[in-house]
Image 1 (cartoon, rainbow, N blue to C red):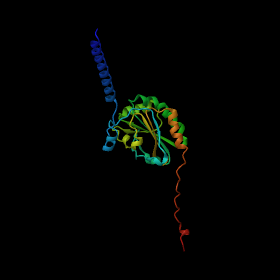
Image 2: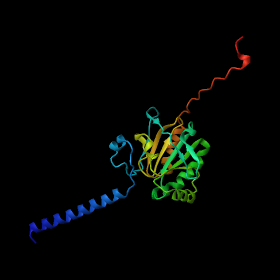
Image 3: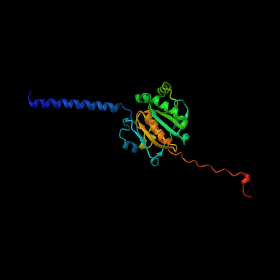
Image 4: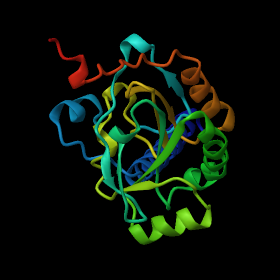
Length: 224
């Protein structure tokens, strides 16, 4: 076989391999859930609206934290839940879906840590996103999740967090400090070490000062 013919065959093989890789990549992207951002700023910043879960852990310095969104909604159990009701507590919000394999894998860790941290004033809540209520309740029952999960079928609640810590992967976990600010995030499946590390860092921070209310003067205290 002459050299020219060998080169032509090599080129054909390389082209076929590259095409197969490209097609495979497009298939992976197309099967991932996407976030349909409602604002132009979010859309421009994150073109696909979804990032792959890289298990990265982020902790923001206290003076750079932004207020957590007013997450309010109905839970899978039919109750009402509001982030505002937990001001003064550390809140761990886990974004999950019943069809997500890493969510199933991390469920036992979340359950264990939530039960152990409850006595320290740490509140856990879930955000069941892009899921059916029936499947979500089944997940919650199967894994005996002890904390409530809000229904977020459209994904609207998920994208309300500040861009620096938006949980734009499934699963993702956002931690809110005692002052109601977004303090940390884990993209992807949590480990017990990563989750405890974020929570313990916030527990070690000074508790916010509580301003005592001035007592209302009684009649006896009124000036003569």
